[in-house]
Amino acid sequence: MDKRQGVQEASSLDLRYLDPEEVRVWRGEDGRVYCTIADELTVLTPMFIRSHPLSDVERYLSIRAVEHKERSLAMGEEFGLLRNWRRLDPDSRAIVEAELERRYLHPKVLAILSVRDYSGVQVCHFDTDRGLREVTLRDVRDNVIYLGTSRILITDAEGNRYDIADVGDLDADSRARLDRIL
Image (cartoon, rainbow, N blue to C red; front, side, top):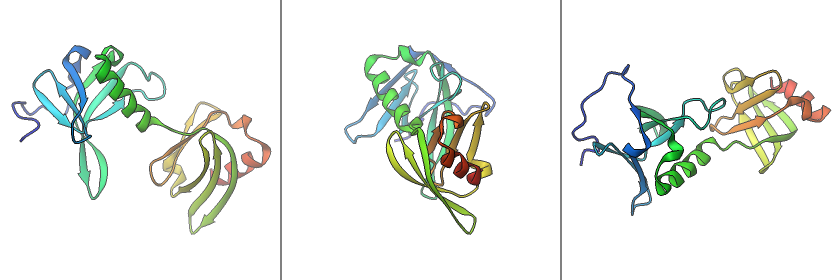
C-alpha cells in the first residue's frame, strides 16, 4: 500500500503549514508510529524535528519521512510544518512528546574525566547527569556548536549530543581537557 496515495508531488520550495486539528499520531499494532495529515496521507515512522531546537522549542515541528540509506537514517521529504503542536489531541501529543524526548535527549556534561587521541579520533570520558559516558569524536570542527559565549553542544560519532551548559562551571581539569578537545 502506498503511504502517500492521493498526494500531489510538491515543489521542494513549497511550505505547508499544518494545524493540530489536521494531524493525528498513533502507534500501530506493530509498535511503529504513524502520522495522518489532513486525512490525505499517512506517514509511516515520521520524524518530528524542531524548526528552532535551541531558541524556540515549542513553536513549530517539521513532519518528515525517514529515508533508509545504507543502514542509517536520513531526513526525507517534509510533509508540513506543524504549528502549535501542543494543541494536538492528548494521545497524539503524548506520542510526539516521547519522540521528541528521544530525539533531543542530550546529557549535561558535569566533568571531562579523560581525553585520548588515537590517530585523529578522540575518545573522551564524560561524567554526565545520566552517568558516565565514553564519547568518540571524529571531526571536532563539524561536531561542536558554540551557543553563546559559554555554552557548547558536542555531537559524537554516533550522533549523540552532549551539553556543556556553562564552561565556567566545569572544574579546572575539565576545562583543560576541553581545551584539548577543541
